Length: 287
Figure (cartoon, rainbow, N blue to C red):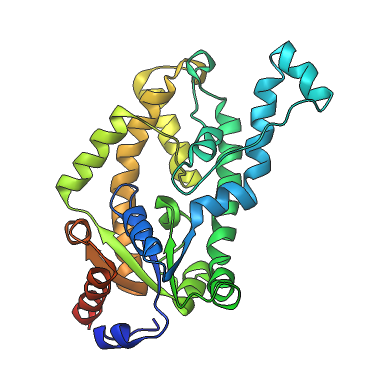
């Protein structure tokens, strides 16, 4: 880590952070707050994934759907219409929509093999986007003159790194350029995240081994075939497993590569100074 104490952090001319946590615990809240101060460059890993690395896949999927409609198909073939993805920091729906959900096509599902292919595309895109962070740290200073950098990682960062490997290429690159900060939620937060997900399930990335075993277990336990699976029901079921799997991974990342702050404290932040004091406290607590 570049910062060994709270004093180091508060006195640093360049403050560089990468936040990680389950979606919904405050990463985007902090990022937007710091960006709006005018002194921080905001790098969203999910936005980078959806634009630089998955953009073509996303748009091609839109076009496949459009080609199913004769009226739109004729316009596409003649280059009379343009189809694009309007992905933003606040709206990552094009990316999650492309990842999709496996199961019954009549309920919006896609074949499991296609789902695995898109998951693998996402894995490569996420690793590349995380490794791009160092480039954007330098770019934010050289081009835009920003002194401070806030990175907002996707919730699946823990699925593409090995926090116990001191030579993990992604974590090594990140830790050499910024402070890794885990936003730790309580049991109450976990239950609230599950409740929100149950209400509006959305696609997410899983390690392939975990995903395959979860799929087989779900088929066996529910005595259904792949084409009969309710996509939303499977995603809800898999999410609960993902939450329990990710917690120890996040904890190991914080213990071996960074620091921890609580989601309750994050919710109390109102400005840049509050954030800096919280990080300083986390660094001193680690010492």
